[in-house]
Figure 1: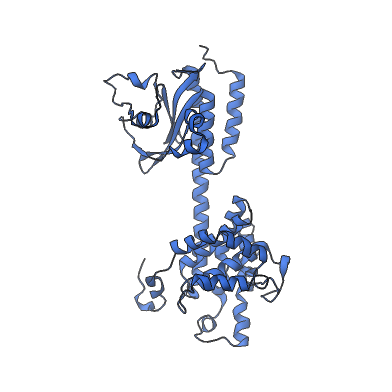
Figure 2: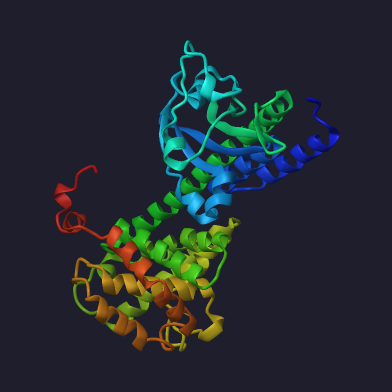
Length: 405
């Protein structure tokens, strides 16, 4: 059998490399890597592992036989993630441990002296028969093993055959591209996570002065992202909403304590000063070059505007209010009503929803209320997951005994 990698194959590898470098979602990237590796090697099935916490964790798996037999959805349901140690006791583990390709023509006939052995449990359970098996370590630019690409049952004229030299070289070439792409994607995700956490911490600094908890910032951000998704916004745009919303009250850093912490009702002059937190926040974030910060400025300035024009600071109405401000306004009010505060208990869910529907077309944009109602179950789940505990409020009552968390 010819083992030459043709110019057409090289061109396809280049095109795949371009696709890998432009894919930023990790799950999508891993799925693409495995699918293309199977296509290049005519493999019926495969699993892609990543090194996590010193072990190999199976992240995605594919099997054409199961798809043809059961349909895509049921075939996908057969896979559940599992972990393998990085040692010589499994085929994928051996590839990671030795940093070398492990190519077994037929796992049913592995030499008994071999340290790793094929386990037939999955095959027996699902009426499958594994024979040829190719495990290729994936390395990053520093030659660290970040995962293993495992391919099963190479096909030739509807027969299962061993992975020949050409298929092995193609798999190695793809694994090399995949290793760099995965590392870049993980780094990008880590930077995005750090960026979001920094914004959340800045938001918490402002909310601390108003005796709000860190969970309030997280809840409002996630509520806002869910509303954006329900409106049909792209995942990228929904992420932008989640990143920008934590800064909605950053302007409270500039409000005097005598007003911010006044126990009773504010008089008109104090109310005017309090409302300036929107303008102060916008000024803090002005002239930003980063797009997230530009959106954050919009949120800081406009999250107290109302659909009917009775809000502040500009008194704008309807579609003149930036959509992200309409979203965060609803998310912030929902959180204020449905969650406990230092000065009040949480309102019952029915009362909260009644208030929001009463304000439909007045405080809130009708399309926002509709989108919000469509994902209310997911919003309630977020509210419950990030619910405040009594100890979260204790620090606001006893400053003398604040300790390191």
